[in-house]
View 1 (cartoon, rainbow, N blue to C red):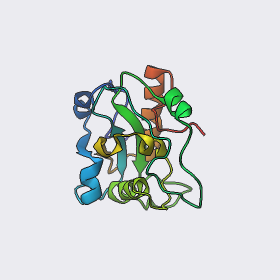
View 2 (spheres, rainbow, N blue to C red; view 1 turned 60 degrees about the vertical axis):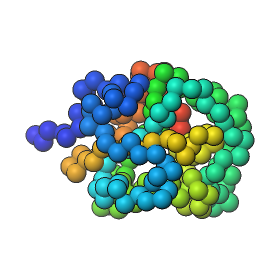
View 3 (tube, one colour; view 1 turned 180 degrees about the vertical axis):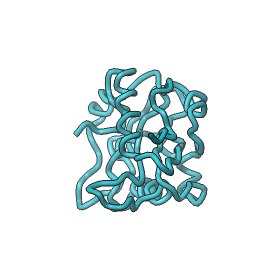
View 4 (cartoon, rainbow, N blue to C red; view 1 turned 90 degrees about the horizontal axis):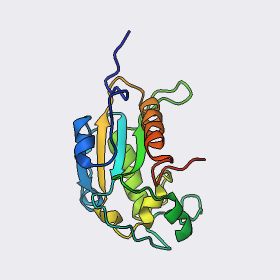
Length: 180
């Protein structure tokens, strides 16, 4: 039996960046820096998180910077964002790149998936609407992206486990992870 490279059964705490470092997440690079150059993101499959490095109360924008993919407005009412907000955590979104869907070979890498996410946040009409709520945060450019490469594990399965673990700890999904 193959031992998974990322054992979610180890205690993961979503409260601080230090907690994420302890379980092997790396990067922690501000969105503004990645908008300039995302070549530091590895070209491998894995899971990633969007982290808000401050504990200050969030300020929401009625119109964020997210792109209109297929003409769909990514913005939601501020009241909806306030309900979705999760206190006492730095993690506001959990995602994956390279998971196998329908038996096909994985296409996305962390770099290609996060590049799409970042382009969406700059108003690009690209297919990355997951996590779109982060682009309605006033401090979106200061958010950090971190990742954990998973050369042999299925990123979709690890992402699902991380989200479920988060939900168990906080009673709801991370702020920008949709439940639909």
